[in-house]
Image (cartoon, rainbow, N blue to C red; front, side, top):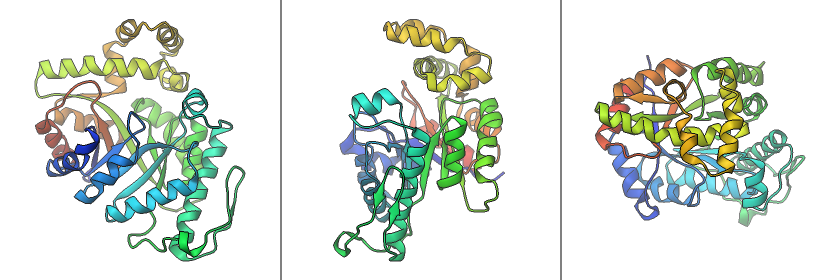
Length: 334
């Protein structure tokens, strides 16, 4: 079986992003990723890009940003990282787009397709010198004076990926993007029965390169006590994900659909501890990978097989030892 590259969440204070990325590279980690949290999604990657490690947004929320902004950030990170950048885009959900970002929400699949296509066309125009003349449904980019054109990137245009869960967004990603970021709240059954068929449908009739990057919630340790503590820590995240209507299809395919509205109601009442208590061991087993580093590497390969090109792992709510991360990277590379 081929070596499987490992990306991990760049979870460090902003000023320590570069040093932490260097430490992770020394542990054998292939790349780091960020997501939209308390800090800007791009800033840590600009600091980490010069360390020689791969860098990726996983994901940058697309709808509040212009494709021009996304293309410039992607171009610069591709340059700084020596061609090791991936631009991962996501849609978020309507309340966040409208109430947190103060932006516009409508027809998310079509809007994401237009955004991805616009970003790729802007990058292509810079790379080839062709006139920029993109006229999409949501975005129009028809002006690019020479002083705003950075010219060809010496490392080529960075790939644009889409984070997706539902069949329509997944199919669209396979149709217009360079790759798919499989959402971390997932199970083997959902991946094989829902995700892969949607990818095949989107790629029908096409032989272009397309990568699938898995994301995994990992409960990992080197002892029974550490593993038990990690499994307990990830339950809170699973309860949060499970309370969101967008993730109901994952629960549904496993026969747990009735849990979603119960978790949703508890979340609105602020009863977080009770939510966590509803996530039992079979759910943790299905929705995460857990155990020793060797166990986790085996579970990742069993779940995704040869369908993926790399895996993004994060360790929410607990501290994982660097030695365990190094063991996981070695096991995936072996």
